[in-house]
Amino acid sequence: MLHGTYVSADDIQTFINVADFSETDRQHLQDLAPVAREFVPELTNLFYVRLLVDPVTSVYIEERIEELKPLHMDWLMDLFSGNYDEAFVARQEAIGRAHVAAHIPAYFVAASMAFLRSMMPSMIEEKSQALGRANCGEWVGSVLRLLDFCQFLIDRAYEEARMDRLVQATGMTRKLLENLVMLKAKEKKKPASDAG
Amino acid sequence: MREQMLKSILSDLNGASADIEASAVISSDGLTMAAILPQDVDEDRVGAMAAAMLSLGERTARELARGDLEQVMVKGEYGYILMSHAGKDAVLTVIARKDSKLGLILLDAKRASKAISEIL
Image (tube, rainbow over all chains, first blue to last red; front, side):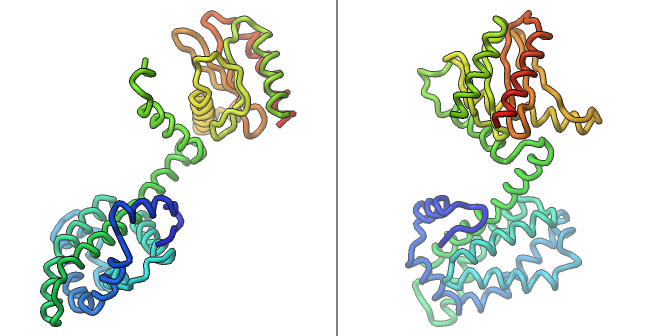
């Protein structure tokens, strides 16, 4: 994985290190593509049913469901491409920007991801067995790692949008805002003996 | 070289009045370009705070139809902080004692700002 527009290569590498996302995970995800093709349409339908049930989320999608479903299926299938390069990172960030532009609250993304994380393991298990594939428990971990990575990238778009609004509201440059934030961070890092 | 020239202007400014405790030239991003500050004052803190105040002052002046910002003054229990533009991308910050003669300080600060803007 390489860097996109918002996240530094170092941050991405740290994420990969801590999440333990390896070449094996990449291979697992690619191998799961035929299984994914089996459950992605059903998962997408369930996902939109879920969003329609809630009175808050339904407002954002009720007149666009047929337009949104193929996009969601494409995004899900992209998770199983086995190619998580700069273009992949940029695609996740673009999704984040689209969500921000549509004024979709950040917690919708977290809730949606939680739904996907809860549904995918059993679907992978079921469809794998149906296709005569076994031992998918380990592979589920690869999917969950990648979903978390996508959420991290999508969430960054919200952070960036917030910073942009702060820049506009205060007239401060981004660099100055970051310096101010870092002052507070420096203060917190001070050893107890330096305090007061 | 440029830092030395800026420091020289700050030194003259600080020497012009016993009421001035410290002064600094700061970029609009809040980074200190030159400063004459007491040892216990954190340069980064002065830089970020002064640049932030000036940005907000500019924004406030504009929003409330007061025209281009000339200066920002903060009065606290123990004295004053004065901030003014020194050219397009720098801020002159002056920290002065309580009961300072502000008229003189403002005049000296204005002269210093002009000299700084000529260097930058």
